[in-house]
Image 1 (cartoon, each protein chain N blue to C red):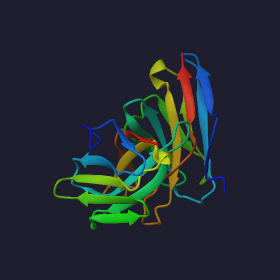
Image 2: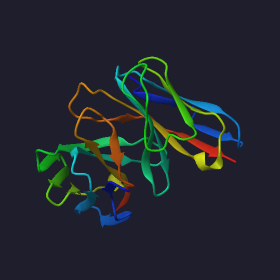
Image 3: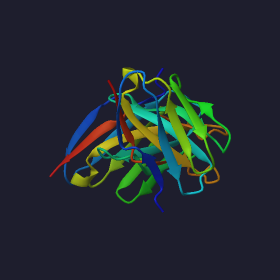
Image 4: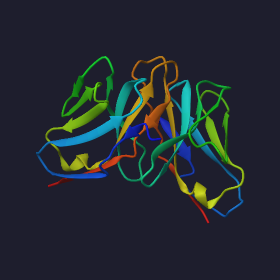
Amino acid sequence: DQQVKQNSPSLSVQEGRISILNCDYTNSMFDYFLWYKKYPAEGPTFLISISSIKDKNEDGRFTVFLNKSAKHLSLHIVPSQPGDSAVYFCAAKTQGGSEKLVFGKGMKLTVNP
Amino acid sequence: NAGVTQTPKFQVLKTGQSMTLQCAQDMNHNSMYWYRQDPGMGLRLIYYSASEGTTDKGEVPNGYNVSRLNKREFSLRLESAAPSQTSVYFCASSDRDRYSYEQYFGPGTRLTVT
């Protein structure tokens, strides 16, 4: 059973516009969420994270929103740039001592010039 | 700092052959991980090591063994490779003393089993 779901496999936006990437989860014991970006032939790199005690975290052009009641988080990129074109993974950590992360299947973002 | 390094970058094996994927990190992290990435499947955890001398199974451990040789190195061994193990393998590390839970990934090993 997939605990972290990224239901849309791809998204295409115009440069300068907003990109919104969505992620849903089923496990109410998740207490920390992360977004990773991955370029082809490279390893994933950390982008931004949010604790379950917050509902928003911002870092430059990237903002993550968390709606715990809906078990939903989203990543907003404003303004989108062609260099943002990559696969984005949502990940979650379970409450407790383990640092293990559960990843979604990823979403491919294409930002067109 | 090199971060997380993996060798080899590419490998082609025949069914039944064995090989070891090497991973090392220079960030003094306690925890290390092995993932595989398959098309449409995201990143799936194979094995995890919280500290030197300890290892735990992840979501897809069958067909693999691991060794946490020391704090820096965590290797993944395929004893008898199967075509189903064709994948891209990523090693990662993290520091549980930090609150961020961020994992740092290596560049990956692309493995093909024929």
